[in-house]
Image 1 (cartoon, protein in one colour):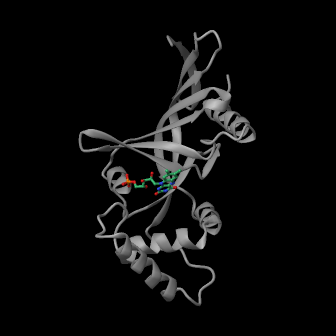
Image 2 (cartoon, rainbow, N blue to C red):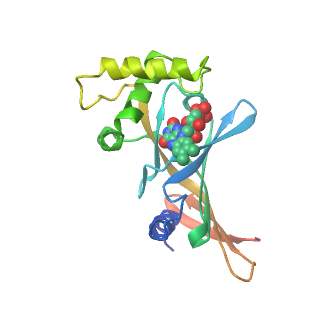
Image 3 (cartoon, rainbow, N blue to C red):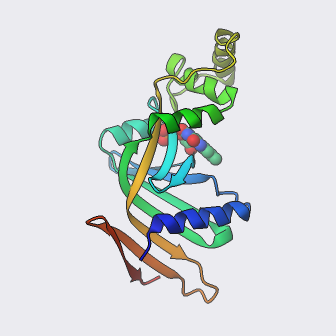
Length: 195
Ligand SMILES: Cc1cc2nc3c(=O)[nH]c(=O)nc-3n(C[C@H](O)[C@H](O)[C@H](O)COP(=O)(O)O)c2cc1C
């Protein structure tokens, strides 16, 4: 019967070809106390293992996940008329894949990860833009001689391996196709949903 991950990968490839502005992002939802918290994250990997992102352990989203909060991921590519609503099992990305992702990060993005460690956690208040830029300037100086800025331990790669995926297929007649996939004893089963 196939798998929703295969569908997702095919749709993402088509979205990339169609230059979909959302081809390289995902919408990541956590539970913050008794309310949902959403944010956009760069979609770092989408393969047979699942959906991978890279975040800082200093961030609220990391705290929410490490407190046992559940994670939901949403992918939407208008160019190919597909939405995927995913829930699944969260795991750390293998170190070698995280290292590959770090290698793709530009210098400023790398320094910002150090900023979180040294000057202020991600999403914490900062008095002014000047303070922020002074912190970055300090890091520029600190790593002045270092071309390949190293990855701080606070950077973590996360992968959601789906166990449930709801797929929405756009149809011109407006009676869209919707499917709920569930992984049961290692086998994907799906049922049609009323759109
Ligand atoms: C297009 C786009 C891509 C983003 N990619 C990331 C990312 O890969 N990692 C990240 O931590 N934040 C990323 N952000 C910022 C997050 O949306 C969010 O503001 C930040 O991670 C703080 O979230 P938190 O306070 O819930 O932890 C991105 C934002 C946008 C608009």
